[in-house]
Length: 259
Ligand SMILES: Cc1cc2nc3c(=O)[nH]c(=O)nc-3n(C[C@H](O)[C@H](O)[C@H](O)COP(=O)(O)O)c2cc1C
Image (tube, rainbow, N blue to C red):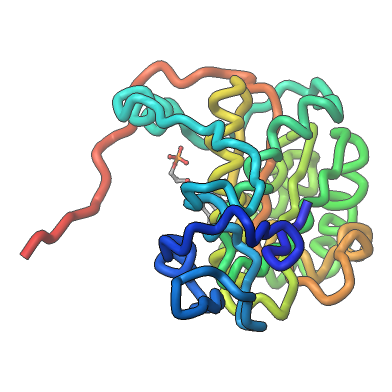
């Protein structure tokens, strides 16, 4: 439920300690000369920090329930996550999807803009109809060009029934973010990243799908699921893993600089 401080704030509980004002990202808390809260400016982004840290429970938010995890347990989850490209065709039930997607409701968004819609397209056949079939029709038209560009082999395999794009996944997750979100690109990716880790914790495999995201404008069957005023910011394939990795992630090219 959205948080409106002006509705939940109980003035008689306020001690004037000023914590709400110190944690507010938008300098929206107004206080009198004793420090007691008198109201909230329009700059409020309804993030709930004022209430989350209030020592006298003046905002009547339920107690915090999250607890940290052992960093090693979290690292173990990071180590376990790999892209899945061999999926079992088993459908993902709505209840399981709701659990999988729950982190989206906890994902941070710039200015707390929120508004992310995740569209879950389910079923190997449905996905084939919406993605591979129209792309094969297009590819048939442009096959000579693909061959000329050196992709003839891959194009032929795709036309012959291989699906290197959705990989037979039983579910596609499309993360749509309002165009008005000033940090929309990051918002969608953060939510999707949280979902990939939840998937790993639930024993499901995911595949980030940049190719499908790029091809989205060419796929009318998928495009009709786009909520008005939003942009597609991330695409994940998800499903039960057909194979578990047997060996660890090779070292990657990265560095940390601590000047
Ligand atoms: C933004 C993004 C887009 C990606 N798009 C694709 C894709 O379209 N097809 C694919 O097979 N893999 C895709 N990947 C997966 C990467 O190839 C993969 O993450 C990388 O090779 C590392 O392997 P890992 O995910 O198993 O750790 C994508 C990954 C990211 C982060």
